[in-house]
Image (tube, rainbow, N blue to C red):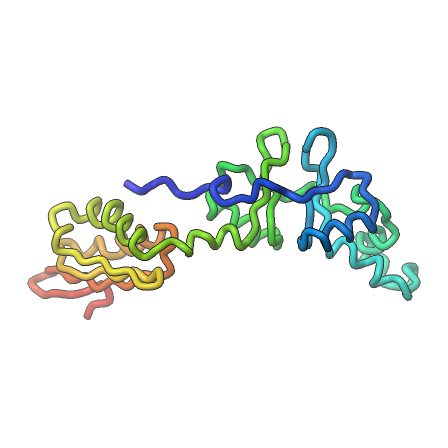
Length: 225
């Protein structure tokens, strides 16, 4: 019924700025500045991801510059205190790296980012080799989809599927990603199903159902009006 959803490999950036485990502190800072990135995968061997080093991992060195680590909440900030004295990517990186596979859906990648509180994910294959990187901005690319494309998919995968006998009488309008459904149907219990399926179409911002039907001899919409 539904069209194949976009997956991470569709939107990821394949050219990735990364560092080796032996990269020195200042080299990491220079690389971040040069490429305007706030985090980078740390690699070993031929490209296996072993961690991620971010600006947050580098900041403790400056934060604790004028503080005595022994007197500054050592139990709660043990990890940050250790990073304040770190000099290489291996010592600074967060590990294991939070990653995603290239065949994961964009929704799955978004959930990982939200739960793990990260802005980007290294994309790795089944053995952990780096394939690319996906960012929050990459996941939002589906909302650049045109209203015409969204309308076409809603007609093909929702209207024609749920209401084959009434599809000609149901009007679909999309404006700035908001889908409006208008028309008369026989079974109003399908309105909530239609709303759920339309919301699942990539690029849809919201759904406004304006469908009516016969129930006990009276027309009514989803909200009873």
